[in-house]
Length: 144
Image (tube, rainbow, N blue to C red):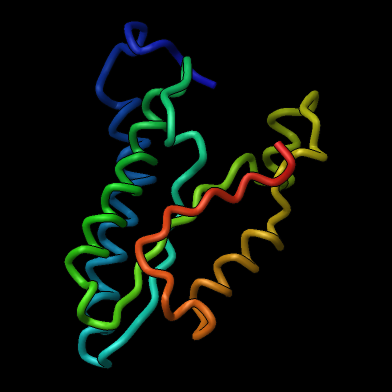
């Protein structure tokens, strides 16, 4: 998917992934939590990746940035456990999208996670049905 760590020639490779995956999530959480505190409740479902659970060759910037989303979610859960703001994090496997199919044409698409399945998990975690689910780090990996 990319270069090995010692082959990265600048911090740009890490910075791009870190900004895209972690800083964007951090900034969004900071903004929405202010509104949730005012309204007295809320639900956040952050999106990390199953690849964040273990380092993988040629994927260090991606894995590291996505693992930071998990740690952020855990930290926010601890900070807001008494505020009726539930924060959970899903860890999708490879998502079945046209872009991924184009980028990985020889892969077995049948093992990938349909976008509808991810949406359903997010809908559940955002609903009253999941009132007691807080701080979950939930793999959504399909048939892989």
